[in-house]
Length: 340
Image (tube, rainbow, N blue to C red; front, side, top):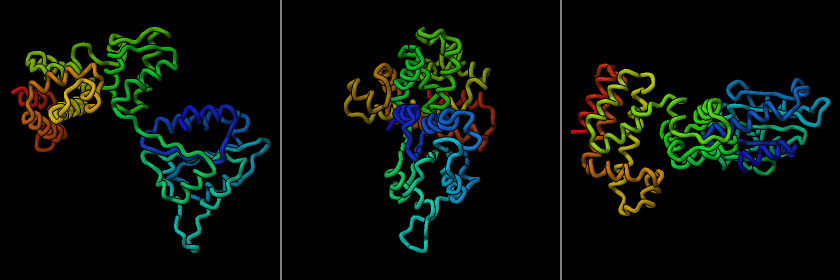
């Protein structure tokens, strides 16, 4: 099931006695968890019929004691276990001496209890009996991280649901700048929508004006200038970064450049240089293929490998290892080495 499917069922009061929300992407887990915590029960019922526990501060017996209670003056009670990956789940052995009381409950859950486990930043072991018991008697949702190439479309979908539109260049810039952290992306989009009228198309100007990405001096313009070996533009951008370090932290710049030149390297490796194949192999929009074609012409295979080595070297130096922490000076040194 998708998060939308789960939320639809919950809104329609189609409940399962157990939910396991697990996976690498916390955003979707939080989406369902927040609904369960704040919307599932009426406020008048929460005091007696809602229990919120945290994995590192609880144990199996506490979860069981809460789950085995009957609701008071209501049809259902909710037991929500946040950060469940921190909890000790007990033995999964066939040895009769290693009885797991939680497994016994999961195999015969109380229908009036809605028990929700939020297991973040990793996958629950599907080989375990506890997993199979939840799968049999409840709902298991795996929240997988989105590939970078899928983020622009996800941004467009999120905004469409909210009654907004966004042009392709704007969604691509957001995806490149914010990465694949959906919680961070949603936070920025929600702030952006406060300054854009519903139904209006979000453009690059809205991004520049509201999210703090300079129109002329940003890491994407830096990538383009480097790809063209435009030394003047590169130095202008680096000087701007040096004057505005909080808006352009070196860790963000180095991370984006490493991603850019790694894709240039993949371009060199690719045997099929068609736009469609390159877009797929580089996990980019076809709109940006021309930028990598230009960069590959500017930097042959050997030079690209050398640049990636430089980026790793200066990442270490930026942390003060055998170097000063003058980030502006380090960036200027790095740009010189890349361009020459």
